[in-house]
Image 1 (tube, rainbow, N blue to C red):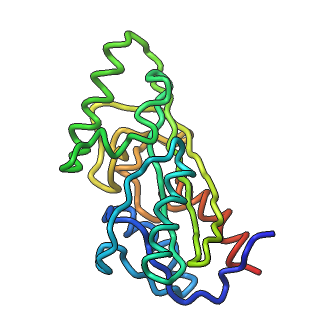
Image 2 (cartoon, rainbow, N blue to C red; image 1 turned 30 degrees about the horizontal axis):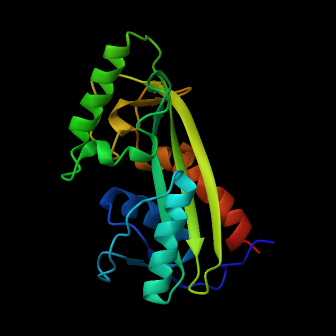
Length: 202
């Protein structure tokens, strides 16, 4: 049985990633939920020691809920590339280095793909969303969106690896796509729909 969050009026977003914060705040806006930023509250970022997206999302949300005394929502997401045996996967942010240089991370994906000699450009984004309460209860949901990688990067919208990701059925990358259009089909949107259906509509 899922726990209802319908009466929550404020959530902590357990992320220090500005792009994620912006997207999640946009997705929550229709539900009139006040969003508090973990960074603005001075909450530390826990080390991501999980072996999966879901484990890392829950770890971050649980830490923020415990520290703030409020329900907390965390996202752990990344790019999985078929030709790289699923890399960078849960290490997607780490490929961007301490300066979060995703230009360098996208270049690394291209370079490593070339070094394999494979022409396989299939990839998919994964998003795990975890909603945790201070009493330790957590609800976790996962969404995916599949597509192909394109080089060089195209578009300055979105964030992270968006400029090299061409979703199936489209001829523009996430980096070229209007934010509302991306929100309708993204991995984050799929995970969000599951969470809303389970926790906010009953």
